[in-house]
Amino acid sequence: MNIVLLGPPGAGKGTQARRLQATMGIPHIATGDLFRSLAAEDNGLGREVRAYMNKGEYVPDDVTIRVGLDRLRAPDTENGCLLDGFPRTVAQATALTSALGRLGQRVDLALYITAPEELLVRRLSGRIVCHHCNAIYNNATRPPQQDMSCDACGHELERREDERAEVVRTRLRTHEERTSPVAEYYRERGTLVEIHGARTIEVVEQEVDGAVGLRGVR
Ligand code: AMP
Image (cartoon, rainbow, N blue to C red):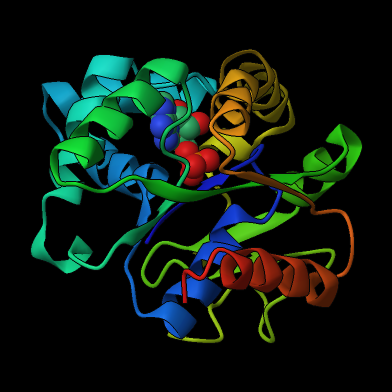
């Protein structure tokens, strides 16, 4: 029961992954979160990862595959996991297929959440996050109750360094060039379900649940 969430930044992958984690009881693994923890460290790897992230570029495949597959080896993934933002290149997808294959597993479902670029830019530029509990707010669509403090844990909210407008455009371009082929990779294997993420959250949730249920994943 391994589910991959694909889609451009701002499409809603994280929101759906966190919700599915609660309903399905399998862990949500986001390479973006793993990289943000590494980037906070003052060492060679931390500085390398931070430089790529701050420019909106992908971290190189060798590092990403090592970090992603290491996390998959933890015991909590025994019954599967929700992979959010990994794989993002065909090389990563191939490495994931091999690693799961060695365990007699596979990617059961790849959910590809899409949305028009202007909406993604609008969503990402209004986004503020809590680095303490990972809650996400949006100045335009989901403001916190108190200005810049997290409703859930009270910590101060911040804008992500890589969500300035010009970096957002680079992230979207990188996604188009390098991650669209990953959607094709899963389409060819009959695993891909495409979901239009520009609609209301309730409609998107229903479609995601339908796709998960249809695969008998629950
Ligand atoms: P995210 O939070 O998923 O938008 O990821 C934030 C940043 O982390 C991305 O813009 C990349 O720099 C890096 N990153 C996350 N996942 C990957 C991946 N699978 N491959 C390469 N870079 C990644």
